[in-house]
Length: 436
Image (tube, rainbow, N blue to C red; front, top):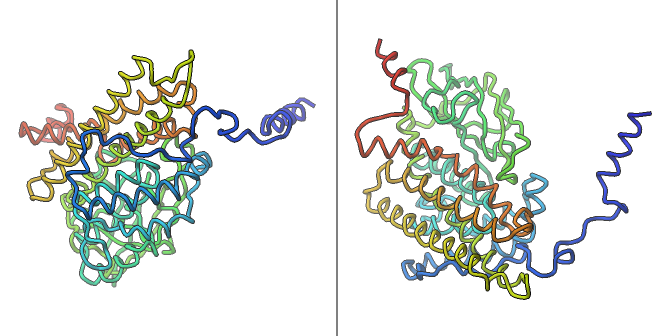
């Protein structure tokens, strides 16, 4: 009887009190506009558009219009369900931004700033869509472009550029995150190819990717090599990771590799050590730095509109001094973040960017974005914890971005090593022991 009673309570809890669906947010809270109707961009206070070429401005306009029209109305629903909106992939493909700076093979050949701007504009509306594109484009496609054979580029890049096929990038393992160079997944040479054995974790897009760029340790040389596996390869399985609090639309997976055969023509010839993997990460880190810029832009835009619409004590929230101070602090952060991101792109473009530059940009920008989004959360009060008004979702989505592609601490140590000449990744005691 007790079990039946508890089951009855649980069933009632799953529905609203009278068995009716919840009110639409625009009915339940009519005083402010939800993020499904995205606000105009108001964050370009220092006229950074003046720094962009006509082509870069056209990319910004095209991506912004698509994201506001196609993604903004559906993002909260899919984020809550932790499902991916596959029906928007052709729309994203139509933007012609996959492949970023890659020239030829059907790729757009954008300037580094054009690619960065497109990343920010996607993230401004939805960080998960931005991560989906970043994994596919700035990691998987870029690895094939930088490290693949001519045959591999011609075979894979054109369909990836159109999103006719989707890729993921598998480096991280259950035991090795920041210490990625120590990975255990193995690649053993056999006649006609390689046998991959091991496990990967946190791999975005992996549950549905057509191509999987996988890094494994060559059992003969003990060096890290790269391979392109196909989703239906015997022995390969990918399971969705559940219960994430951020980037919930992104389908992160656990990949199991049990005697997965990869033919010789799908080994990436340009990946012969972890240093080759780092070449890709240094470039993709620039794009990752533009994600929190975009997120902060969107949060500022939402807060700017909300404070003028929402009234308390007979006045709009925008009329209160403390709210104005927070809004200005957010705006100042966005201006500074944009300038650092822009300069990082220019350093890359001129061939002067170092790994330390990229790491400082990523770590510092994500830290400022965290502060910006936290201020937005305060400004929206109770609505700051509803995904309908973007800020709560952005608050959560920023946390994995703060961590992936190198945590704040690891990126700080990369820059620290570069400016001092001393590596401090391993505790001193461990370094001493390794010399014995």
